[in-house]
Image 1 (cartoon, one colour):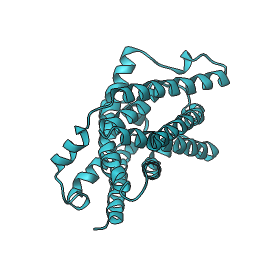
Image 2 (image 1 turned 90 degrees about the horizontal axis):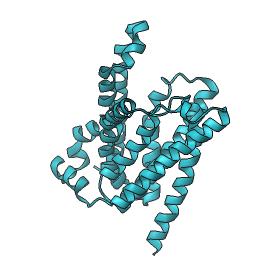
Image 3 (image 1 turned 60 degrees about the vertical axis):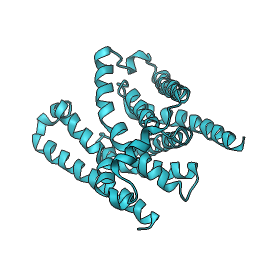
Image 4 (image 1 turned 90 degrees about the vertical axis):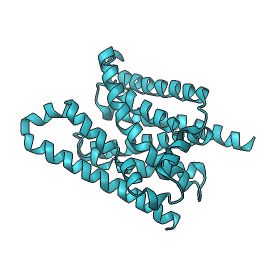
Length: 266
């Protein structure tokens, strides 16, 4: 099987598996009627969402022998986490992501004429719940597929930056079914999709650059975790903050691209 066919097989199976999982969740919720909203806030629903988020890893494992015929699952995961972590890099990107989130929320608050605190829900129970559910969902469930397999697979033929953009677009459009369940329609839906894709593609580039400089899968997991976890603290209209979050992440991405190029030129 050629590299292109492996890319297509993994991507298509990740999409199909997610659509199946998403459809099953819909099949459970739709017959509930007025009780659906209450169920969506339940731990069982969160567990179902977590299972759906793991579909890229399921796709990797189901087709592992075709995708990576010369290695074992154990060897793959051992290699993915064996590189020494760059603590300084992790602390830096953590601080930057926190600044990006609070900066975007601050801009939103200023435009809407409200206080920053009114758009945030920060308490120990909220943080603990957000941390727990974020930890078992996308960050841990997706990255073995997107960055453990797909990113290095694409880097066999493309540069780090180009591969990161490809993965970002694939990763972003994989979330497409969720766009149509957020309550947006018409122009609001179009704007949400545009700003979401900018933000997630920028995040993908940051992940790709940082992963290249510290080849441990924990790095993309952590950056993805921080991206999702910070949003659990936001209580306002996500469409109001998304343009500013996209703009701030775009600026950060430019900075990381310049850093990456200078590191390679040195």
